[in-house]
Length: 580
Image 1 (cartoon, helix red, strand yellow):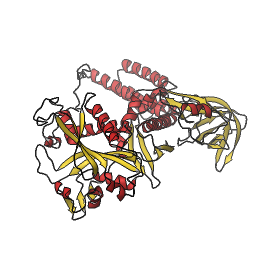
Image 2: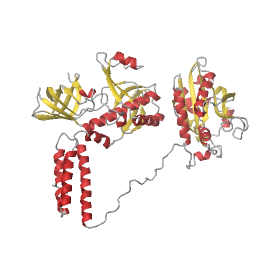
Image 3: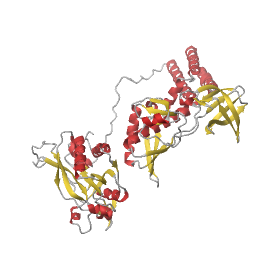
Image 4: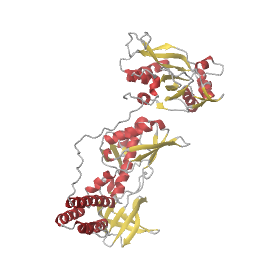
């Protein structure tokens, strides 16, 4: 059986070992080794590439895969390789390191998704050209920015990545759920990112999360089975790859020796053009040294190219300096690197977005998921399903903007999302849904024809008004402060029964009385109540078994009170100067 060195050391680049078996597969040769540093393709991670050098021949390894549990090294042979030969292995380190970065990025993203969407289960990962992770369940597309930000936060923390071998029984003690497909007849390798729980894994990873370049979440897609695919990208940062190569066999010595010799020639020569041609010409010393180093298999081609370009630029500057000095032309003064740079303006979140994200975080902690719905809505979902039939007097309270009468309009409230969730989801569930709403209003300091609402819905068995009060008390303390006082008072809303208005103590006068609270000491910030039985019956839910609560808040007004904005038009005029 081949010993897998990469399981204990992902950074080993060379190895001396022996050929256990060799054969042909089509027009390629396969080799089985006593030990290997080559990672075979599996778990979504591409295989390593490189070379196997023997006494009388070599194999350019293009692919490694498992066959009957044995890693087969496939490629084209040059010369003669045979069973029993002592060989040297050399992996393509640049490709290996890139695979390690992309693979580790997948683990980082998965840790974030486990935290903010614990209800989904991982199905498979792809960590090659188009990296992605597929989950059973819905990963909300609105979480894209949160996933990306928290993933890059883990990178910035530079957490140590460790691995160890455990039994399946030992793993069951560490985790709340262990995948059924894991074998029980051998010890399992698990990795841990800092203090995060261990994850079963047989691939190669970097040593610290800080070695992974910036992560971006490119898309979250869904299939007909209700699965989510989170696609991601990892930035290409050449220096991270090359810095590792520099410590191991980078061609510095050859190029530095050439540079030293050329500088001596430049200093001693009176004919600078002749020396320049001898060094920089098509068949000059620089190109000849480059070809020699490039042909040496112990050096990575990318590292050779970078070192060559750097030396070429340095020598060009030396020749130019010598030529300028010889002509007596005064050199331009160099830039003063001690002077302070020009500050770069930093963009900030819009106040409404900042408040929405803060509230999302609070409700995530209370077990709510974020949902969204269409802004162009039907009359059925905007009114009828919300206990507002054609003849209902409450319709007169809302001036609707119809796109196509009598059925299509711009939604007048985010309660329409509530109607969709009731129709499409099976209880129990908890959702919040921030979004834009539209009404035919005269635009002034207090009203706008486009505004933001923040709605919430929870449906299940045994949900009561006490649950609504507890949820709101927790939210208000976290948003406004631990000493915030609140109260419920009776109020009519057609989609709830009973309905309540949610008031908080005036944040401007602390209940002493002012123009904001109209000298009442209280400010209304939300409407809420228990979901009306008619709405439950409409989606074939028995009100005797199921109940729920709903609430709605004006996001614009929350942002205005948070940032001291006294005119709603300031939120949309494109000239915001409020620090978020």
